[in-house]
Length: 64
Image (cartoon, rainbow, N blue to C red; front, side, top):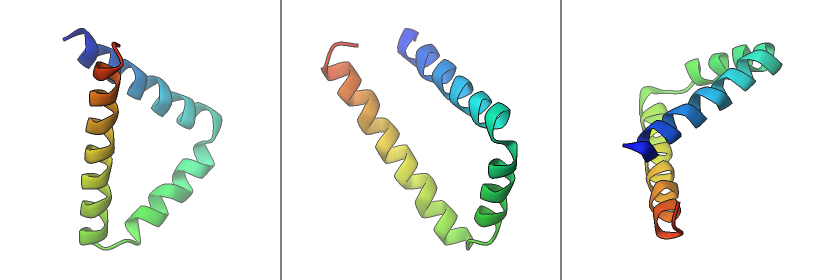
């Protein structure tokens, strides 16, 4: 449970930094994502889940 809270906290920090430091870039990124097909966005989401899961497993393996 601690690891889950740590992960969620880090996501919020990173998202907050992006919105605070580069709001126009975030708008550009949203426009770019809107131009992709649903299948492309789905693949990006699945890749993000796979990479995130791999990072969590690596962190657990390394003792975090």
